[in-house]
Length: 243
Image (cartoon, rainbow, N blue to C red):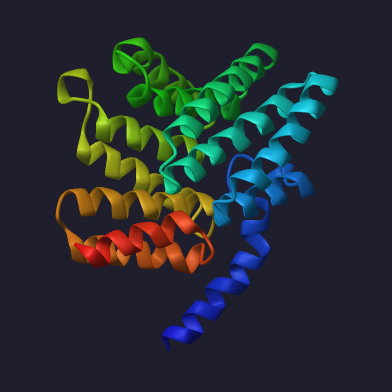
């Protein structure tokens, strides 16, 4: 029965995940597919090559969508850097992504994706720089809230907002319960997507941090059903098994 359910999920994913069901669904292209596969393999060299091509295209086209793509790929590079425990790469990717996202926001102030990526990448910088919370926390949260305001179905923005809620101190608006509500919202919006896989990985990480191993194990199992080749998911699964 379980194997039948897995096959059904994979059939759904064959249709949905290639286009990343969610806010960027209509923009799937070969370059994005290359970048996504490099992210899943945690392959920084391949992803860097793709980012360089995307950056060249963005500089030539000078459109918001082109800079959104660069920011997205840098956001994925942040994940690769975390899997590889490479702090230098993480900071470089976050800073480069913020620059691209700011350009996208400038060119398209009403782009939910541009605001989401700017908010997410600023959030990535917070633990990497001196006084990061003071320097970037409020702007990151404001950008994520703006992304959701512009597109209440931006599942990616809800995942990023969940992280902002989870890691912010209570006196600055942090809330673990609201974090999980945001993840649930993202999953409801895009249940068979790469975004949902990210949400389940985040749920597993949050549950593990709170010593809820059974819940963490269930969440990461679902993430791996949705994204069986994603190295971040396998890494989190390993951490759960070792606890």
